[in-house]
Length: 349
Image 1: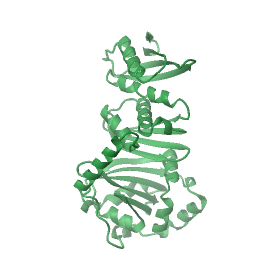
Image 2: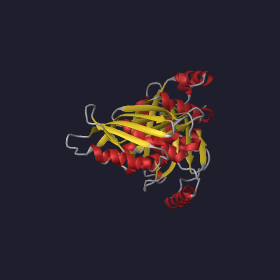
Image 3: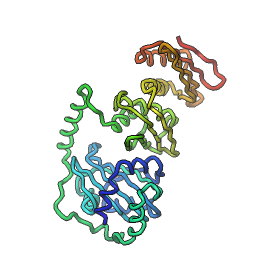
Image 4: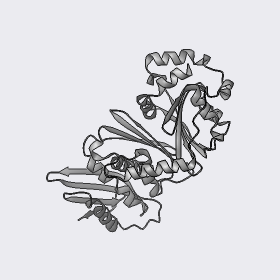
């Protein structure tokens, strides 16, 4: 049963729905040990859950991933990817049970609870009717691969693969690892990201950004705006269509959905604004834009200070935003900005 369900639940459309409509119940980074499965089960004792595990080498490189579906704390499906190989069912559970002995340095985990209505009717009935007889909870610890498994890649093998991948990405027109690219760009400006999850379907994309709860972050709306820019950069403007939902997970969860079926270049442009502001301890509070005839773009910003001791000069900041955006905008550009709803508005040029 677990083998059959594992293949049926390995569905990008279903996972996209879970990321879009589910609720994050846990997000953490753990050392792999024999108690890992019980740790995953703990927040998922009631109802359906989906857990996404990223396997990290001791050097901090991703060497694989495991997806686990649970119902009332019981594992009903498991999909493991080690290198290029995908493994399903009981065999995948065997990989999970021996991570602590396979050279994995840490496991980054995010877990979602979700409503059964997200499942197709036949699959929902099968799971809800039969999961109690799938396997005893204690028996999961004893699951072992039916045949010898391919070992997790050694650190030097992973490094060689990553070097080759970086060389491929550096070639003109080469595709980027979208979620890794977005995460690295946000980390460069100090956003404390611990994990990113990307799910894509034909109609929409869901990007989850998980931040360290013990660290301070910029207002989530600003992180979302910057993430949209880097998502477009990674994918390429000509390949971006439809809606993108970005969710920032911190002490609270914030989500915004952008329809990128039009004005893709403008949204990419606007996404550069938060990164200009962060170094001045300023953030976007409100943002509007108008695209007039003749490719004339007008951007209006209301900013807010971070802390009472910010001494940013609104004239200098407005000019800096203009100069940053003008390098990417081919037409006429005007930037208007003020700090606070009652602040003096500055226009440049």
